[in-house]
Length: 491
Image (cartoon, rainbow, N blue to C red; front, side, top):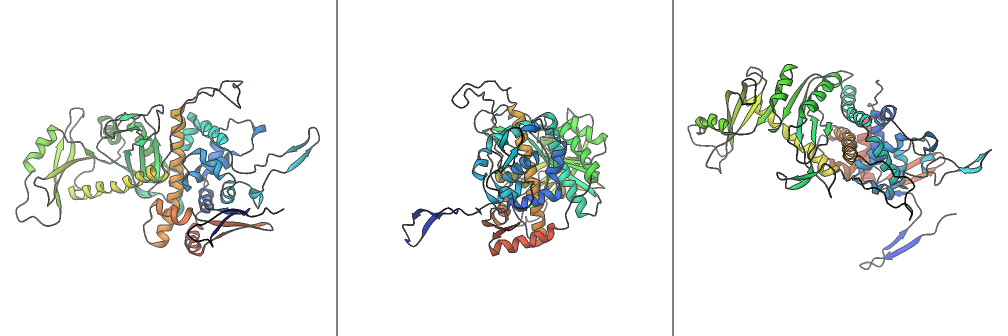
């Protein structure tokens, strides 16, 4: 029986406008279907399901692990940062279609059917009647936070990038790939385990390190760290693992580009030992200041109206370094400033391979990587809020059993890894849109124009029709044409 329309209110500024609630399948999340199509073609959640350790009792499972992973990635991609938001989306028709592993019209079933059981009589089937609830999703995130499962999620970050490259290049690896590494402050609410007030950023933060691939714009590595750790802490293990993955899955030769906090003797020596080229900025110190002093003069002639810069080649050995290394002094002249500015680069490239100006141009392309990491922080805005709070009451009674303490730091790292995976799914869509339109797209613009789209979902026999407006349909058609050739079928 069809429900009646429920009048809500009439607009005061125009009494002809009536607001009603109707029992129709309406959604503002139509883009969830695009994200699921991308996830399916890259075979992300299917492969994750095969590799992750699912500790749930098979007899009690209602929502398959693949559906739960789809829900998390699509939620984050659509802009829903908090797991509490899943309850608001639980019966959204586009979300139900996008996350479900069932075919046909089954995902839009309003409630579970009843089945006959010879021993127990009539009971409800295990068919889910919507997205998994917030408690279910929270338990799954906790399950994914085991050491094995976090390693699987971390490896998948690189595999997603490699799959995109191999599909676009006819199965061939890139000749070279540049790994950009930096740290990223993530603000936290409350006193999450491991977070701390960082005087440099003037906020209570986590201080993860993040790595991207310059050629694709994908995030290929994230590692959560405490709020007050030094930038280089754990960087050697983190970077060398990614270099190994890059040369195994993505390219013939990997290069590393880093900010000023990373170049320690341990890391530089390790990269040199394996023959990995690197470029990093150096922090100024009294020795470097004295080395730069003879060059703090402007070239002869009238200064131009535009800023200009030039370089000088030198060698330098810090106290902690085992040997002298090539450094490049970069001088900057700005018309509005009286004194010259400067900074230093250290590199394993020889002058014949990259001279000073070429090395500077190469290093300055790090700015793109910094903007990508900024999008992870600002657009996806990971909600790292897990905290070990023991449950003292359940349904107005004391709990029968006390659950083991939650490793909140591991849970927060899992949430960050899932957000990074969601970022890579969105970046795959963005790359296709940019190629099709010939213009650049930010993730926020992509979400506004492609993903947060209003739609009406209709059932026609055995078909589901998602009706969107014409302007959005034109954009979707462009994207869909580019998406068709992509379908990962590798091991």
